Image (cartoon, rainbow, N blue to C red; front, side, top):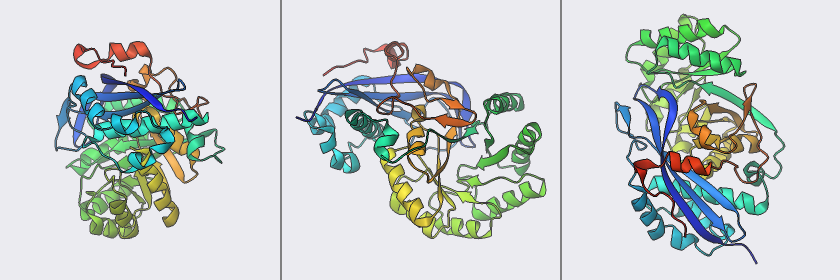
Length: 377
């Protein structure tokens, strides 16, 4: 008899990041987290997470800038929407719901989907990357350091850069997209002068420009001795024609677009917009669709930051992944066994499932609003 989903536990946490992070649109120091566990009748306990940001400075509104409801309301919504679809069922019978059902709350759906993946891998007795690809043989994978530096001072940037270089990272990503080209150029020069020519630089403009401005910026950087390996997300996600012009003219590759969670729109950006790499990683099912799109276009996949580095499993599972982003945030401190990064590479975990399980005492320490955050069913 197949084990069934027999219970759940739900938490809302407020987690410090350990430093200020941000881009040309925002800066913040904490995130809210929905942490959901699903318990199997055989004793396995799987975890899924989703994050939201609302305490900070934001130039423009964005889908991820939302306060979460109080934990009691989150539990009530889970019981109303997802729990009747999961309770008493084998996790392997929930694929249709995982792929197509929505509760109307993206922050809840994301946590459920990840927990289902974790539970499936545990039921199979496999690390998640081996469930995603049974033929996976990687024991480590390339990572790059992302300092998320736009709101930081020069001294803070150099301190973080030094930390990552000492950890063995050979690629540093810089946040650009200022109104003033001299501001971006000064930051790029600062980091280049510090790391030398052996460390590669990439940059993320977070939708700051139109294609003409993006091309002018790239050419200005080159004229000043800054040859970026590639540029991420320089244009708005819906500017397909602009991407087509930029990718045709740009002397460096253009990568995107992790603001897009619809595979139809992303396909247009790849096939018509000419993207030379796909940036993704906020959701495993969407990432799998991106892998197939990248295979068809023969381009690489560049995985962005993910909660507790769960994207490591995608990187280990698929050769199509070029590299995975790492920012060294303190959120990982709540885990019993975080993903290990050594020599600029992420190391394969040996635990079944994704293995990114919280320390019980941390669930209490970082509980939002001082409420009773644990509800067992």
